[in-house]
Length: 280
Length: 304
Image (cartoon, rainbow over all chains, first blue to last red; front, top):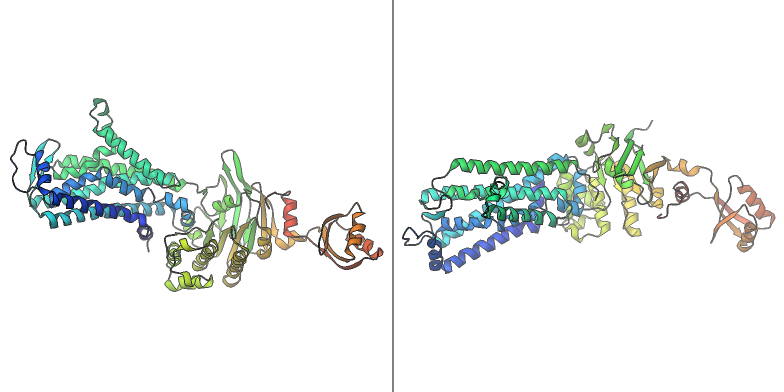
């Protein structure tokens, strides 16, 4: 077993890890069944934003529309599920005393922290892939396929993506969702190296995500200057591939900002962990 | 000359303004069961944590197998097993899985090796039970199974019998002796329990207030200028009266035997005093336990 294998094995032997998957399973099934049962009403509501300039007829709710809608849960719900595990990666071992056990074995601290971070990333990736597979799979089953019609925020306009384009773009959106969620995971992971309890990193990371999101959306000019420095500004990167046309330069800018935050948070976690005195 | 397995030089650790450990120079030789004694708060755990790289020393160095433990960490720690304070394991994993995970951090471990280690410590029948169902004593035994599994040359144990009942303490002591005798493992055993060290260790060091007071062979350190004696006499009441009348004799306790404390070299005088007063002396034994010695050199640390 490699070190990453050991850390991943440990992560997936804890029931807490499956809370995220269970929550996603429950939420997606609930959402899609409710939409299915109220399809006419939901179609009307979905079309309301689009129908100011167009007359929309027929069913515009399909697997791709449902996937685009579900991706909005990435603002709060999924980050919470990510922090549940990421915030626990180091702190839980410190609290239970197994960190001592780990750090007196031959692998260096730098290898251990990289392995733990990798396991956290694997969890984040698998959770988003599970979300994607479930909402697209169930969406196809319940609503079928078709073109993706959605309202684009910037610039505000209705977007129609033919099915042949909607499929790869939706998959790309989920791929970017993994990147966005990895930053939340990295932040919780950083906090996890600082303390010996799991609650602090989870609450700390979620508080920052919520505060940054609020600051990022408040319509005050005075806040404009700090928005580029908030990682939450770039977290809705998943929306960009669903625009038409896609501003690839913007996608690159967002992706680099998120990768930069990942590197920053992990770098800080690495620095703290390799120098940490284990007193407990 | 015995081969030195573990050597600390000027090892010190300061927390804030307080020196937890100051200028500790230890030497553990190959094959030793080395008792590391000291009252609670003496700095034993801090020393062990520095040896095992959990804490960074403020100054000084640790060399194990002749190599710097921080610089040659992988090579050194591949041959060392540490059990630091509580035997903490992944409680959501079985005993088998714990050993698999922890063993593989040192080297590739075969299934048979894990089963064999569990058999030696008497946990084979609980191999697939989650550790959260284990008692404290079982976790200690699992810790020793870990030591057996990775076949280390040096095992460092910090208070291994802490929190165990007498039966559990005996089991752990026996396993320590097994490791030493059957596997040739050098044992570094910290404890604040004097009897524990006395019963297993051949060499020892005593730490108090973060400073090393003494180290050497247990037998040499206890030989010294013995001044405690146990006397078996008849009639005992009369003997006590005679002894009490002498200001230079301190009666420590009276039970089946009379324990006395006298200046060095006056034992014969006591014996003569009893005999001339028609007291039958059936035994007169010099008594110097590790506890006496320890109390003397640590100036009666209160928590022993």
